[in-house]
Amino acid sequence: MDKTLDIDQERLIADFMTLVSIGSHSREEANVAAYIKGAVEELGYVVAEDHAGDIVGGNTGNLIVRVPGNPNWPTILLMAHMDTVAPGHGVRPIRHADRITSDGKTVLGADDKAGVAGLLHLLTVLHSTKEEHPPLEVVFTICEEVGLLGAKALDRSSLQASYGFVFDSGGPLGSIVTHGPAQAKMKALVHGKAAHAGMAPEKGVSAIEVTSQAIAKMHLGRIDDHTTANIGQIKGGFATNIVCDLVELYAEARSLNDDRLRIQQEHMTQVLQATAKQHGVFAEVDWTASYPSFALPQDSFLRIIATNAMNRMDVTPTFVHSGGGSDANVINSKGIPVINLAVAYQQIHTLEEWISLDNLTGAAQMILEIVRATSDYERHV
Ligand SMILES: [Zn+2]
Image (cartoon, rainbow, N blue to C red):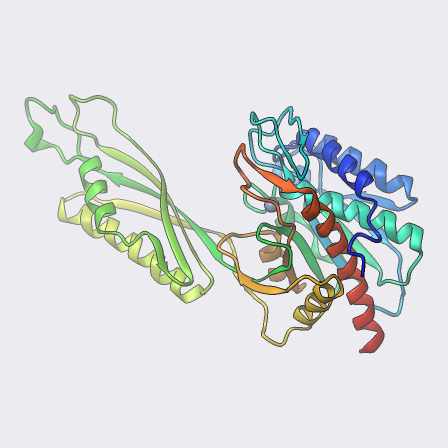
């Protein structure tokens, strides 16, 4: 089949360029939300905004678009996030022969405006083809990049969806994320004892030395197939002539396996506390769970639907485990099974971020084929 048969490529590209040029750092998504609202309302669909903005202190909530479909079929959730990382103000997208980049001063924001553009295009196509499809709940979330806050604030009871798809992953088109890690964040205060560094260093205990010794003993980086850990930030000390009495340490651990995550957390806590104790001081260690892991069963029908969608467009489906969290982690934990599909943007969260024109079009086609594969599936169950 002609892979771009249904996609108006020029319109999609123009829409994408407009979307990325509207800055939308996390908690500042209102302008892009207004653009999405306008585009959706032009098609005659109703857009609801939830209260997530109040909860997270942002200037808009999540947008929920309900598209009526065959009432005998379950409602399907389709999601992309509206926010981008910084620097994302004043994005000037540049269209090259085969790709779109920023001007090098900002990120591009294809993460996740490529997903947003694809979903808007889907609505346009369904509106014009009038083909049969399940009822859809298309959700555009806020604050994905700062801890999946929009998805967390999404009220489960306001959604009718039985299952769904998140369009927010790098990797080649056809990558289907079936596993995502849980993440936990650590804040530690390592206490020392202040003293004059020249006159009485033996009266002090350097929190910096205690912390460095502890970090040197810690297993960090890639721990195993499933688990990673990282010290991200360290603060402490005032002057060279004072033995430092307090260090703040910020770290994280992630794992696809909840037990291994717990073991890694315990390891990091234990090393800090034991090392402090050896020096006659102490460390306070606090962990908070950022988001839960998800794992889609081997026989999940979502795998079948996603595979069928890829087959429809001659793209090879590849099932992958992600090392990063996405809205899919949160939505799964709310009891709606979802998988995360690659939109094929590259070098995200950098000034070199780009997406090829083929992948932008392919992603939009893939979103459409997912809905069609869902219709096929519902027709036959
Ligand atoms: Zn993203």
